[in-house]
Image (tube, rainbow, N blue to C red; front, side):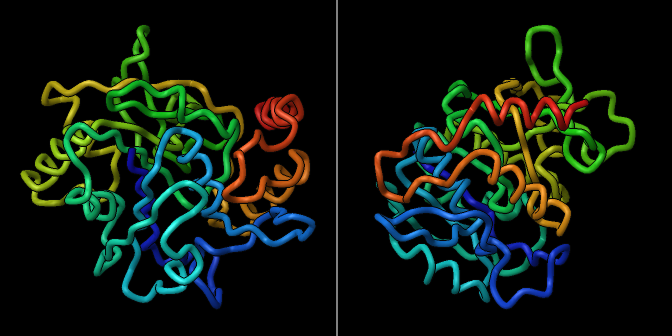
Length: 267
């Protein structure tokens, strides 16, 4: 299974930094008796591995060689590959840069490397079809809200709209490789005009495609702003230290405590 990590963005909301935003230190991890800073993108990579990924593809811009230097060729049990997005022209373009690596029958996970969310094992809840991992948030207008029918099928994705009528947003998604290629072909047929995955999926649904939403998420933080960075630090402080990479991948922190945090944020 592949995990695709789109990491070519400029990170303008939290600049200036002297390194790629995906390497922003957030929380810590232990290597034996030594506690070390943890890059924010490590949280997504660990969650993808917990979800079954054994290959990770970072999509980077030409100037982000520090990500290659940081992660190298592997992370824990997963092999890492890199592809380049020449220009930061949107999430769809970034994701489809990895398409040549993926076989039709392979599963694909996609997540955002500047987010931290719980529970860590939530990706394992997604079925083997186009499926979105959903999280409740306080300010859904800043995210992509997923509207479901009574059976859990996706009706529509509202991309950063005011008063969207739901507070459930997608934080990651899964699909077979053949669906990745179907979406890529549709994106090409639409002359690559879709910057965000939500608008492309809406076109996919209108053409007869199917997707489901799984409300398995409890807490979600976008670390791409200073306020988000502070929220992430508070979330991690209440959840306990991160596990060391390449170990047995135990559960991170106190899940009951995380539920209390998520419930408090929803009040």
